[in-house]
Length: 498
Image (cartoon, rainbow, N blue to C red; front, side):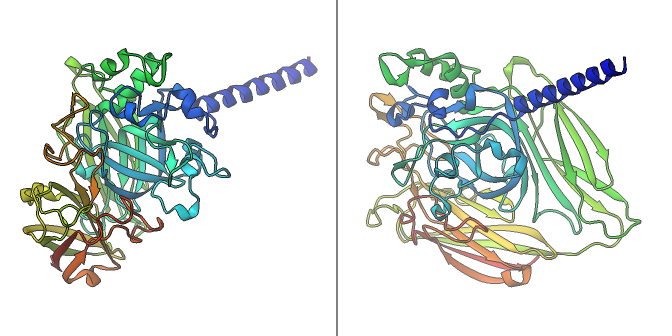
């Protein structure tokens, strides 16, 4: 009896171990290191057919639509320089996660072979190198939830291969994995511009709007490569992507996350919090539990009729009673833009060019065109008055970072090309009189970093550069080829005590 019980116990223990291993494997599949895996999953490496919606730009890793989760520190957030017309209504928001160890299985390719997410090696100075890139259309993700460098971020989304990017410096190095689209993200702000003294800030956004990216990924499961043309899918694929309702993505039943508190100032301090609704949300159930070091939050979005988009957007601000570190209020006034190269690729071109510009000021994101609509038609030498003023709080021990970048709208939105009407990707306008090119020009980057609020004070004039070393830990970064956009515009701004 004793021997039987011991053997039965060992057997049950072994079964338990195998069960746990099976569950772990299901939750975290093997890292997709094979260079052939993207093709097995549906990528075709056919640029033209991808542009014409005849071949998918995004396919699920392992053809698995399971919503995945990842956490880490975000780097080099920006608006996309260009995106494929017909597959976007808005240009994408882009960012990159240096993953926590438990999520590194999500990186595709091989570190030793320098393929996939590891392509190019440490000297590649690429924003995505050894990081998980993640994207969502800028018309879906509101600015309050865009992270900035150094923010800790958790994302939920579709784990996919980016079929449109499989080369590095002209060499085939294989597709990279990324999350695209997201369906939720939580941003723990490292340097909150709107928190009160002593507060921490966390932003949450959830949405069922999967854009055309979700439609392409789903249709790549239900349709298959054309046996007579291995560079494209069957005739029903494009109609599937464009079918009404296919952009709506499923959501998790519940999103659970932690909202960290700032450092506790004294043993007897009491934690309290406030929340701010940042978007008009659909019905949801929110549960908040106050812990000793923050909030435990869960959010469940309720169903809505008619297949409408569900979304939830909120910010959480935590603080302790008693003494707390002070913050420094600043007032930044964006005074003027001077356009030096309206067409950065052809500086001598005298035609007017449409531009989009974005600004990130300690996590305050803005489309500069909202201050200056005339950016949609700029010429060499043009001076544009901005007079946009932003008030921020700089926490003790933190600095000020100002990023401005954008695109010259060159993609032929609104024109007929190859017999087909090319859709407009917002916020660019129709581009009707430019030579046809399926990419936009980079207009350069302004990235000014100040170590403290005091060092940021004064009047500043900054000239855009085609590349910068200003993103912490990211080497030399360019949103274009590193040449186009050099000295394309000048920004003048003033920083005063707020």
